Image (cartoon, rainbow, N blue to C red; front, side, top):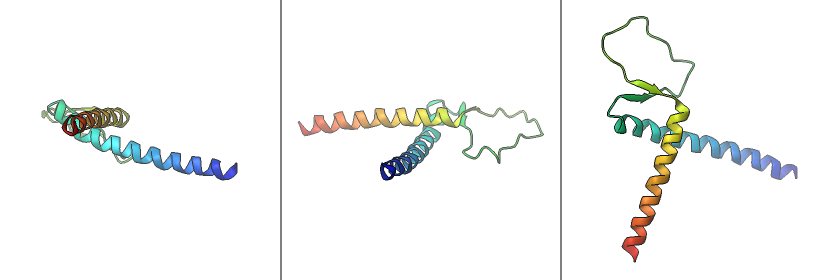
Length: 93
């Protein structure tokens, strides 16, 4: 029992980190493309983010949270995988 619990904790943590990272990267790429640059994704490292003291007239894009970007990335991967599967099945038939 302890070995299976340790394995579950280890694999679950690694799986979540990889899945979150992959979702974040895909979301980081997809959000600005589909929003035509109106939205960007907030940085991965939240501690190093600082607010600028100067206010420029240049409009900056609104930011989407990292969790939302991860969700958008995972949905994009699921849809792309489904499309690839159905295209593969259609070509094979």
